[in-house]
Length: 254
Image 1 (cartoon, rainbow, N blue to C red):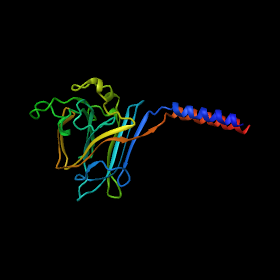
Image 2 (tube, rainbow, N blue to C red):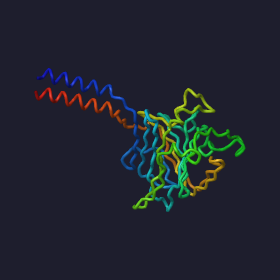
Image 3 (cartoon, helix red, strand yellow):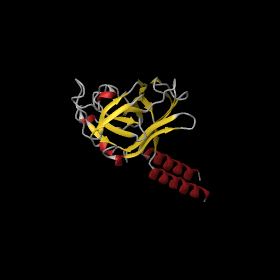
Image 4 (tube, rainbow, N blue to C red):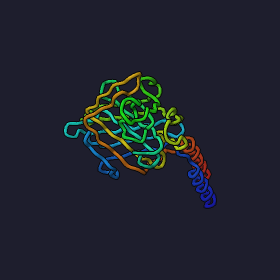
């Protein structure tokens, strides 16, 4: 009986070691999680969550804010990396602009140009010294990629902002600037770097479905690098593992 138990345990351990982790999940809770570089001028961030699925390329990001001096955010821009702080990256990452300034929330994805976040959407004539934008998608022009956009006022007075998208076109994008071999788009894994700016007093305009203006009166930030994520094992692997352990248990009882 002991030999059967040992073999079963070894099989279980082996299957666990072979398990793949297609999705990585980030969670941050104020007062519990480690403090990043954070500024609450556009609203006090209470909690945040994000995920990236390496098989489906589903990318999600949400934050819930409490009013600070009567201010709540109406949108944000966001860039993430597989570890390093995205700010000032020499190679491009995806950068997202969420516009919740009207009842019809919108989302835009560009390639981050390594400069300040509010310059990646400009065209070359919009401001001196800025690069032409590296556009990827707009929810106005292609809403099919957007699984969810949320700008929700909650019963307790907080506000939740975020989105979930199919990021396949982002991951397959060839950037105009930087080294294409280093393009990570929206992906992250066991570690994630975050450059995230909520904004209030947001005013926007568009041209041909792309941002022409994204201006604001207040901004906060959440910046940091190498935050640890939690992997979600592949469902098929977990089913196989469960079946193996169930078979082992039956053999042991026999």
